[in-house]
Image 1 (cartoon, rainbow, N blue to C red):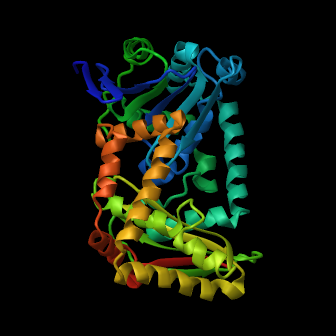
Image 2: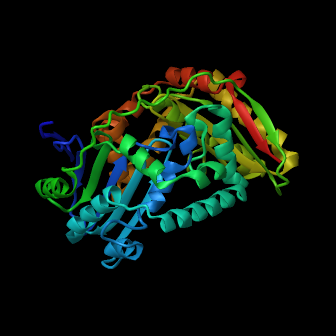
Image 3: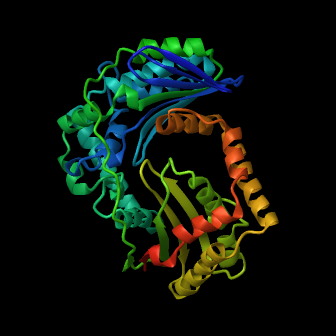
Length: 414
């Protein structure tokens, strides 16, 4: 594949000969951020591989052909840097923050742990035990476990419904060959993005990436993801003997390529975003004192998405809390936002996005994800324009579809 270079305003994009892409935003900061994001997550696992993507994330730090675990961790930490990783349903990411003079040290380390890890038996056994304790920790935290259980209920029988950590029974059976097979099947250069925000010339970043990543090849054809279909609303109550009830209501939602996602992001932020003046926080907490936490979230995926509202309340207050939530949802379905209300909602969301993008690390993650999903990085100004263009009638159409009472599922821990 020939090398291709494109300039998108403040972003620069380059494709290596093997298909791996690089995206970079140059800054003057002494602190740099770099990540390698791979389009492989828990939804890509076969049933007998449940938890393998997350297990790999752990094992990347446990030894390579030339480094032991201590040397991996010390490589950046010895010079004041930080290295970490995470796994989601659709990607695995290794990322680091460091002083700008350590770009080569960082990229060499990324290449080493991602493509030369040894997955030795002792490390494999130890990390399985660590993850088993992580699973136990989640089960002891109902406010976190309920989200995983709700996903399982909404995406019944589909890989999107699986817990990212995996299940204990399958995790214990995973072997080195299972790990290596998953990497061979899914860590394709064409599904890998190197993202950078820092004070380095783009030409220099390309040379370093070529040095440590260009020789990586994978002839294996990519395995297509199973699209989700067949959602059926459900309501369940699980007895957990918790001090308070934990509740989630929600629905499937728009995927990454649906233009209506901007309207749903706006409505989600209006209902229960990070601001203290959201409709749900004002109705449930500030005016009635029913909850400590209430939040709304919307997560798009490649082929679908999920919208949720979560709150925790005393068992005696669950019904009243739910009535107030439905009242707010019904208002958005049946009453158009006024000009002033719509303007304020847009200003709040745009302001929050602008503040988030001011973080070099957040900007890096956003660039990497955008390149994986859209094969381009949309400038912030274009996103703001799309938000500004949303009409009140479009928001009502979104609300009527996503917030329909007949389509909402509900899960309660008591």
